[in-house]
Image (tube, rainbow, N blue to C red; front, side, top):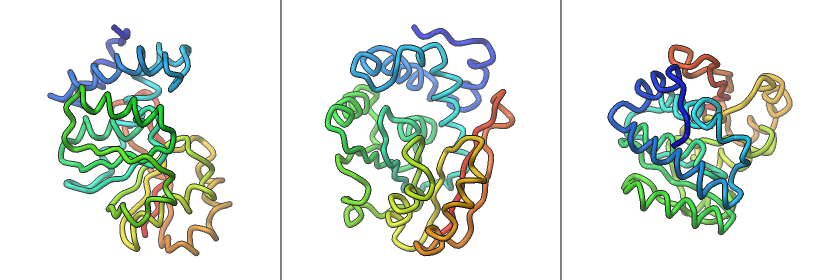
Length: 209
């Protein structure tokens, strides 16, 4: 079992509710096969809950009910699987180019019996004609200037991008502003999620298209 502090457990109960057993099982996958297959480093295991899973799952608060959501560069399912577990009402499409990651994601989806998730192998720009969603999420994929071109086209003219970012979010927006406008982004802002449940809230760049 991955250790969870009382504060993390209280936050996890608030974020996942009745879905918490599934979230716990997902964390076990991350700490075992996920680490063994190089999806994340051993140093990340002690902070899986705070730094990764909860940090991603709180973004669910920013997504309208019943949305179709694509997660670009899903990797270890952060944030895609966290959102799918926290919000069974969402239809999640995980987009990941690397075969070993896709295999792992499919194994986890099957084990958790997540009926609201499909995994597509490919780069975001290769699957534009197969994916049309309301919301696109991404975390640790690339700087916003590059990420805009990978995410905005998947909305096909309407919806929003929610990119989990760090302290340099405002700076990234400034550098990417021209590119975002060119792709149809009408409004770009920095929003936060999880202030009421996490010690350190999650910073998100929201692009409305």
